[in-house]
Amino acid sequence: MFDHCLYFNTTALARVLEREWAKAFKPFGMTPSQAFMLRAVLANPGMLQSELAATLAISRSTATRTLDGLQQMQLLVRTATERDGRESAIAPTELAIAMKEQLDAASGEVTKRLKKELGAVQFDETVNKVKKVRSVIA
Image (cartoon, rainbow, N blue to C red; front, side, top):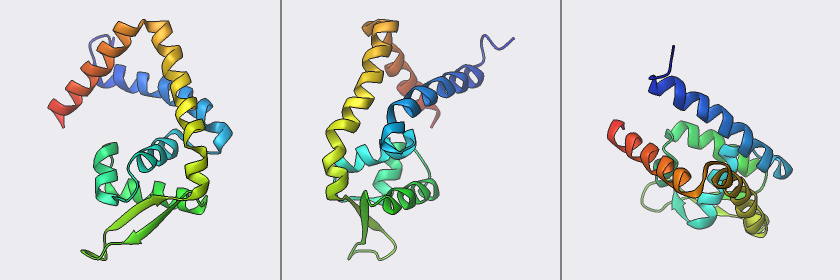
């Protein structure tokens, strides 16, 4: 019935992937959204909240809610910028920096397993095609 429906198939895939990454990040007490956001901040300390939202392809309000959770976990700090008091620069705390390698490894294990199951070429082609579709539609 939905064999040719982009929405249905990508949403179904997203649910499966959400479960996989949820298992990977559960030991850290984080959701996949929180973990990927923290990984983005760790990769680019000091990035603006608007840049972070754009990087993760989420709305600023969604970014704010996820940042609130990470800040409550004492994994990041937000600092108002001199340029615009409404904009925040995001930086990881020492606690977050200490867990960077473990977060990356947990995510990497999921990717490694999926590449093995799908085959590296199909995995890479699928990621690239999904990125292309997303950029065309967005």
